[in-house]
Amino acid sequence: MITDNVIGARDVGKTFAEAVREDPDAVTVWAGRHRDVFEIWLLTRAIDAEHERALYARVAAVHDAFPNALTRVYLLNPASVEDVDEETLVAENVPDYAEEIFSRRE
Amino acid sequence: MSIDSRTNAFLKLADENRDLANRLINDDVPPLRWISVIAFYSAVHYIGAYVWAHDRREISNHEERDVEVHRDLELRRIAPYYLRLFDHGFKARYKAYYKERPESVAELLNVDLAAIEKCVRDALPDTDAS
Image (cartoon, rainbow over all chains, first blue to last red):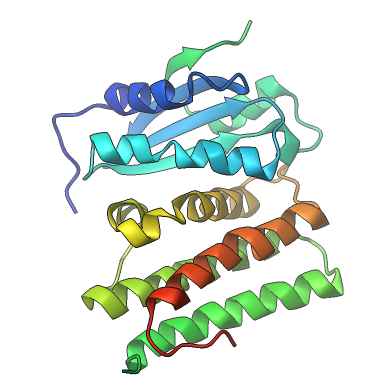
């Protein structure tokens, strides 16, 4: 499968960000590209499993907009970690090449 | 009509992973994180069975499977469950601070993996849950 070269990580990230923007527990979206794969990170407030599924379901918007794009989506859910603050959680997961697309962090 | 031997091989691997994950959670064997990994690979093989049975294709990597799960209208219904298993399995393998609790692992098995297995088996002829 060939990744569409005319789209960029920002396009993919913005599409996903638009899909989750209305969710008050969606805090920050980053997007980046590693080789042929578009990567998206979503920092959330502490949410349960059902809420996680609802957010993963929004990934469909990316596939609808970019059917051939190879993607990976990572939720950074504070409820799934222990002994890690939010700043460290982000630093440990979001690489330097990722661009912040959307945030409601203060 | 019955399913072919290769589809059955995928199902056998999927069932083995599912059963191992269930055995580990029932025995309360730590660390729970590895149950997430096993559950994810069970899902990989269930989806492999579906794609082989319908298209006679094998998916070679996680990203292509992700595209397939969203492209196929039947699989798209279980895409959130698959993505959740993928993400939890990834964190379980690579992130030391990632914490699975007994109830969260049980949810991955009994809700996410179960939804994928049901979707696949319902779409295949003459299969019974083992």
